[in-house]
Image 1 (cartoon, each protein chain N blue to C red):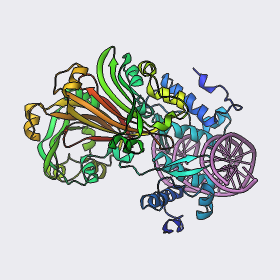
Image 2: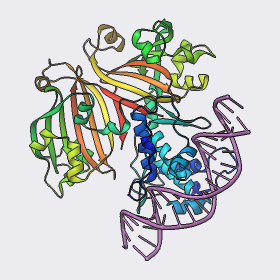
Image 3: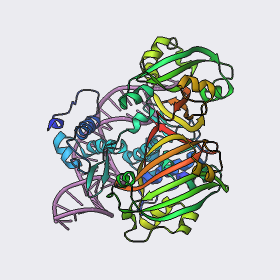
Image 4: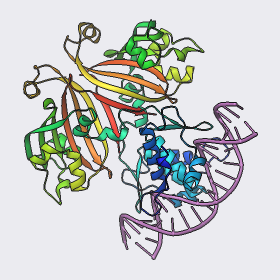
Length: 250
Length: 250
DNA sequence: CAGTGGTCTAGACCACACA
DNA sequence: GTGTGGTCTAGACCACTGT
């Protein structure tokens, strides 16, 4: 139960403040500290790990910005109730999302290839109108039942050093995972518009609902850590099978 | 144009790092630094304001967590493109939201008073089932046109020291503003579920749409900075007049 | 190479919460 | 009162970026 107290790795590249934060986060998630409990104070951490106050402060501040604790002068660092979603996961894709909900995600690829950018896609991806962009059109399935549609356009700059993802890669894995591992691109931020609309005949057939059935729409532009466009995607979900969950802070 | 360089107030209660951050944020928002520009380095800020490095770091780190800049070792603090919504504003209520969109918000109160908590409301507000909670049922208007419905339940603990808001107060101002100024309660976090559904006859009449018209629904639980429940609210919006915009980071 | 931010130390004074 | 986190100083060494 005092696992988190063992000495830090002072040789490796991992900052000490991050190691301390991870130890404490782990202790929270395994229930060693419950909601309302106070974490060890800065002074205690200094003694425990033999670090200076700035280092333990960095660790605790990190946990605060990540939403695990609140810090109150005179009281301490108080553990918050467990959240279903961490904000970091807000950017995760469909497959991560489904797995978190205990469902098995899969994809059916309807169309994949290069296409000329329309005006709105060109604006979103910051390319000239008509430039060839990578398009994929997929059905999103949870436990083999259709739950949504994804129309996704990817910036051509991502494929400088390697080809675009194949249909197999799109069917098996997460697109964001593929971009990370193959292109070295990390998601930095995204802007999403969420709307509601009635299903048109095409959507209705693919999603196996009546025409006019309410759908939940999300249009998202995502950018890498240098704020350059990665993807523009249009998602349509069956309203009886899917809802968005948001966590907001401050 | 060098307004932001004048000396800091070292006597007042405002931390120096915050003053520096506000100066820089202001300089960004007035266009003195555009997207892609680099802000003054930590060393430059040290000289400019006569502070230590930890202080200028705090200022720049604050701007990074607030989403104004990215910091890159070896390169500097780079200004990001302007965002329509700051994450801090994600928690703002309907009136702030509408004003940001250039519309004039107003409310029509349908019902207001105390009511016994249903099971789901009791769970959200962490009171016993049947406890008297404060309910308000309002139509949300933008430029005098109905845009949504709000059914809101407030925790009774908020009204220990003063009565609940009157119908006048609800019609004129923001509920969150009233809670802040009258009860001293500040919003800390909120969890929102966003769904889509077809309008039922009652909703259709109030919102002036056909029955079956797609609506955008939001169910939100909000908590104060000590993570105690404040409000549970059910919002229904006309899908042709309203959409949600989200900013996600990291 | 010089400049940048990332990390870390070892001190200091303060306001705040609680017993 | 004691202990908490909030702020601040004045140093230090490092890895990374651009020239």
